Amino acid sequence: QVQLVESGGGLVQAGGSLRLSCTASGSSLRVNAMGWYRQAPGKQRELVARITSAGSTNYADSVKGRFTISRDNAKNTVYLQMNSLKPEDTAVYYCNMGIGTVGYYWGQGTQVTVSS
Image (cartoon, rainbow, N blue to C red; front, side, top):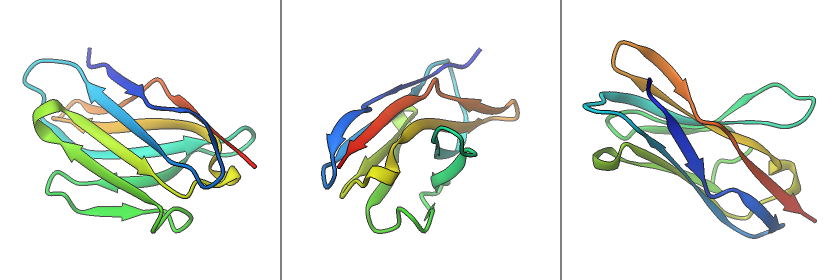
């Protein structure tokens, strides 16, 4: 069983920054695309950012220019640098990785709360 462990969430004032990390455990993992999703209470889970194995990225329009996704393949880790945070960014953030031919795995979620 592959486990994805997230860290870096917390409480921050509007305009502040946070950096989320997500690391996959396991031996000889073949990690394909990595992504970050978020879900606010009463809302559907939405894609925030995605990065392919080749390093190509895409972002939700709502975070473009403020968030940056990156990866460290040697550490099986994906990061999300979040700058200029807004209250509407408040949500539980989940990382996701496609691993080999097994399928997709999700992190446990980390709470990000942005105060006014």
